[in-house]
Length: 464
View: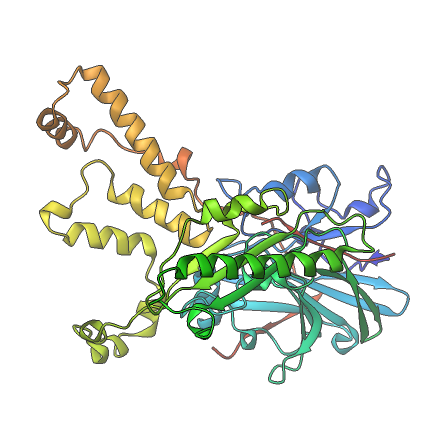
């Protein structure tokens, strides 16, 4: 396999390692790895560095798909050739979904194609974004991608959908490898885990599914107590004991099923992950889940969250549409909606809130930044870390001032020093605006611009 001369070297890696690792005569590379960064290791700081940059500078892999701007995106392919087969490898590392959505809508995403024999290339695209819809703009619709692509490898999503699925509108195929291990107790994680081996010859492809046998088993089941009126009802005096016995029976059945699947695979972990979700709507009562889980503490890997109670929400008639001006909402310009940022909404909320709702210990800027980290990067501990940091700093400030240990004095001192006790945002929450800048020249490419309208890094290997 060779890198086509017309493929710009600066598309891969950084200025400190400005070439693919298998062309370095000082390195012995058996299988070259090309990887885009994910949402847990996206570039940050003034130099726009991420964890993959350390690996690429060491010659361990080839990092590509970095974004050079927050306003527009120009995607250059890595051109690979082996024999008569030519592959144009495109990639986008993780970008906040709302930002990338806005770029597509504003026609600010350009994909460059080889100028010569553009129809002879197999176009492979790697993306790490939300595929399922989590909000109006918090995902990337498949229709946003260019129709000249042959195969899209979609990362970030955890559910394994390794078999290529054809998009009938754009006429390309999509494969979603999913996560290689169970990362959450959700139904999508219960699907059998696979990896794929892609073979390409000319413009034809074949994806071989390879099951993973060392993944810890995960079984999940939902039950609704109202669906079993012949067994128990809320009016029975000992209904709680009957429900516990019923749940225990269901867990035993799942353990038996897991044991049957594990036979023949000695490398599979012995204790499976089990999740039983119980809907106790209709007058039933929950019971102590920790006491129930003690019966299976030596048989399951997650005894603390083995059982989960849920209840159907009852719609409140008085709060459905009351106070919502749908006409004003729909008449708002779409460009204005797309430009809204979560930190601006937080700041606007606290600035217009009543006096008793104003922040006294935290700052609007710090709170907005923490919420942005929580939303954009899925940093679940961002808000908690902000509060802990500010609380510790305020306590240290009060100790240095020798403030009396009375609630009135503390409140007065905190209000007085609110402007001084500020957060070091750049050290606590690094900026995500910086990206690595490279000087790109595209003599060998012709731009094709759109005219219409998220763990660990995902690695993809290409066999020599």
